[in-house]
Amino acid sequence: MVWRTGIASPEPLKFLRALALGLLMAAGSAQASSSQFCDRSHELTAAEQDRLLRFAAVLRDELAANDDGVALVSRSGLDLSRFHIRYSHAALAWRSEQGLWAARQLYYACDEHRPRIYDQGLAGFAMGTDDPELGYISIVRLPPQPLLDTPRALHLLAAQYSANAYAYSLRYQNCNQWLIEMLAAVWGELPDGEDLRERAQQWLHDEHYAPEPVEISSRWWMLASYFVPLVHLDDHPDEDRAALKLRISLPSTLETFVHTRFPQSQRVELCHDDRQIVVHRGWTPIADGCQPADGDRVISLAD
Image 1 (tube, rainbow, N blue to C red):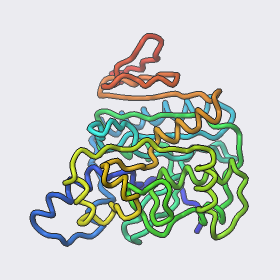
Image 2 (image 1 turned 135 degrees about the horizontal axis):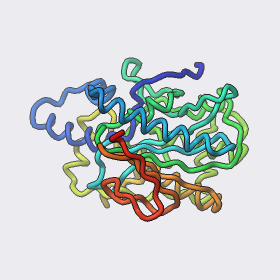
Image 3 (image 1 turned 120 degrees about the vertical axis):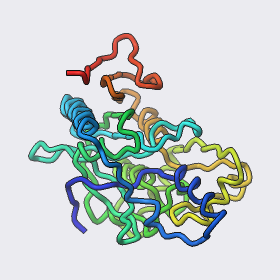
């Protein structure tokens, strides 16, 4: 497979929506296909397109302001606030020799029923949200490093996708899990091989990578995994399922790991509503509702 560029609908961590739809289906039909839960698109109005394109331009400017050329970028997607989650989907932003920025990421190809690796333009990345009225993007600078070569990157790609994949299982993988395993292969200087995923996870374990458990408030949510093709529980340890706490790789876990490993790394958070774009620097989170704090840069969208 070759790397591709363009705009698509990468599959972020959609387990909240999938669980909810699974519960509704359980009351009616137990038959479903994965195509019902992915490649969803929101018909953007002209104003929404303009807002998101301007948001993507600010993202591009922030990335271009650093010469390192590589950054961890995370995007809000679904409203996961009930799980205290702001960011659901992470990618590796990199700049080509021609100076063009792209976001390298895992997505679920619905037509092929399998995960793929995809290079997407920043505009498409910014537009991959369920709420065009309010969005967040986080940028964490990474030290200069070569991108993983294609054979090793593909050896890190699991055959099966699960939106809520357990961080230390080889059975499934989600977008964020592929990314952290790729970083592990680079930082651990791991040689290629069919067991590369296993060695990457062992390296992460040795380096104390520990995803914060996502607390599931009800066992009804857990039952939805029996009806939703892209949600699974059979890779999670019994004790985690019993405690209703799932250890899933999320962008916040990746950022914490990067910050611990590289304390001097810089973080920038961007957000927009229908009135303004806010640029917030530092490791403290930006206020909910895209509210600027002292020292934040505010860009009006009324112009």
